[in-house]
Image (cartoon, rainbow, N blue to C red; front, side, top):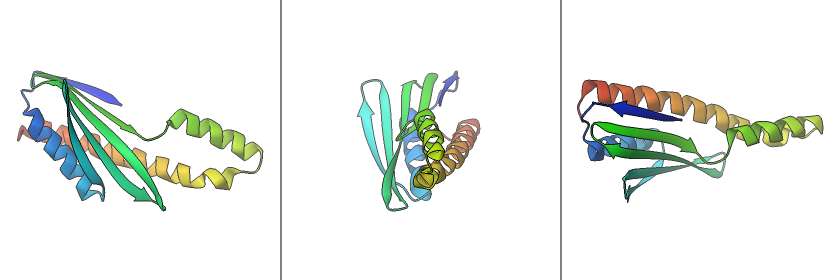
Length: 124
């Protein structure tokens, strides 16, 4: 999901630091990379013995920027695979991916609420 903010005059480098803190508080290891037009944060965590990755891109200027939140894998693709797997009795095989999807969705909701609070409080 991607959201755009206009006329907020946010210190983007500080916002990116806050993004890292959010993921670290949720058990992820993070890496921040400077891009040509912004930053990318990669957050990695073990989930049932497998590493999963979330990426957040913060692009733009302090008064006009976007944040793009995505995760490793394709949600639609996983749903299709699960549906076909269920037809052939392989539903249990995809259960871990569905658990990750539930975890990811809750994490994404928490992330956006956190970002909205940070921007609204204008501590950035």
